[in-house]
Image (cartoon, rainbow, N blue to C red; front, side, top):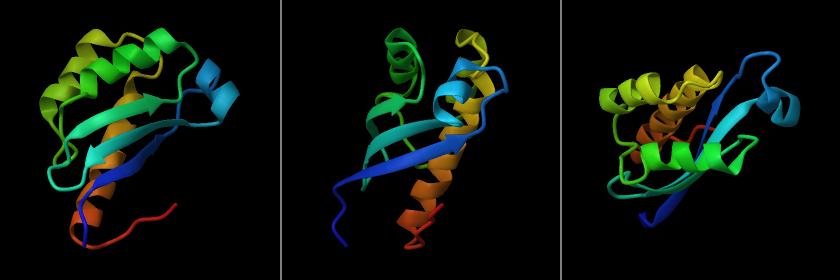
Amino acid sequence: MERDKLCIIGNAKSQMGNPITHQFSQFFITFIADGESGEILDLEASVVLELTNKFIKDIFLGMSLADVDPKIIEKIDHTYLGSSQKAIQVAYKDAVKKYRSWNKGIIITE
């Protein structure tokens, strides 16, 4: 199996009344990761403002989807003070789960 780049989408629900929910129905982060290491090479989140997307990107770039990193969860808790804080964490954990399953040869589909 060739291990190039992977496109992994982490899904989560955002709060009712959140502009993201109105625009996209749910929150998601599309991660581009190295297949071998799980290193996050790029990402985009379903947010309304580009500045928010850049902030989220800065949290994750260079990190890994190989395991849930408590430092990332803590950083989101302490620095992202928007209504999608928990959705970001859930989407990240969902992407880690999908990467780990793929790495074991199990494909998860929605």
